Length: 472
Ligand code: SIN
Image (cartoon, rainbow, N blue to C red; front, side, top):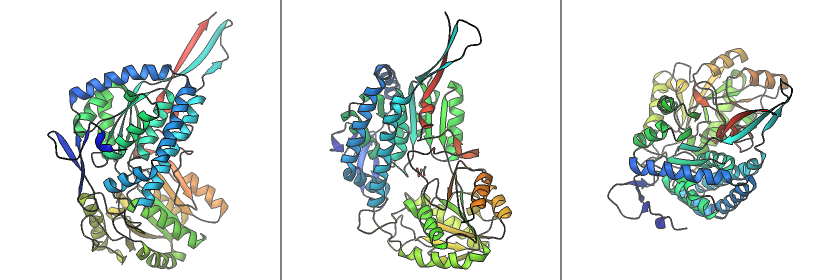
């Protein structure tokens, strides 16, 4: 695949285009054509026509084409991963793992396409038949983030396409190449071109049109709670169905009775995946007093073994942060915590590689009064809080407006159940720091969002229920 054959992607600067920059070295990778208001309105009309054709196909036909799309993604894994590492910064091995993860949603929803069944209800009046149909919602829109440039797209487009919808995707301007590459493969797989459209350009202009259009019947967004709230408001005028996967502030709790080695590995997995730039990564690490020093020591030993660098280099497992703003946020949280009494155990500064590279950092004696307890850091900072009792830690873990993911480690089976039920989160990892997969419903409660992605529930977000009352 040569991305530069795509009519929206250029090697050299063009009028009315924007740059895609490698966060590891500042290199300009490509220029992307902006989509403007009239172009977008035209694309919405094209998607409307294509959606009808797509929905008219047998589910089996859509399923087959999605399976082909899945195979093409896997066949292009190395290429897609390299683009991702260049535009997003994550280490190549993690980029490859993300492509597999992205493909898994396509495979999963290919199968789900054939399970969209209705119902027959037992009637209230003799002679009547009460039927339930499930129909595709129509043309949908997705606004997707830079931290998982491929999987956050497939997690939305796969259920949309499986159910017979068309979808217009606006990826972040930091990682548009991964989105275009997926669209090229989808077309090759026989997915109607106007059923999966990628648009780029001014985020406010594009999101205003997508949110306000009566022809777009659903919006799915992954990103910050702040932006999610704005989109929610903008969608009010057209009463659109919404899926919002927003910010998190995940507590990660380790009780005295945990397996310490597993807990330390769990913290490393959860905290440093994607250099801490995930919505579900551990943001507050609560350690019970009896094992506090041992866990701190385990992390002091492990964190320096992380290799920071350009994701294309061998052995690197911590890439750069996405931009300067991200780096400043990490520093702000560290400085605030240090000023309020936290102690620095590892890292704490810009990495000697400069640019957007930051040292993986460990702080101890962090408290609820510090910024890191309230806000998502979205970077490689592991802040350790000490706690005494189960009651206290559950109170503190839930003391946030967010409710995406939470984790805890304990070997006490009664506590496993009790704590899992008490945590006010959409997803809970017990004795593991990694919970994401295509089979399970991904999503949060409170201000972490609405709806679920992936799983058997994910397709419902793209379907409408129609009730037929038939008098014979
Ligand atoms: C996210 O950070 O938004 C998604 C992470 C995941 O799917 O594991």
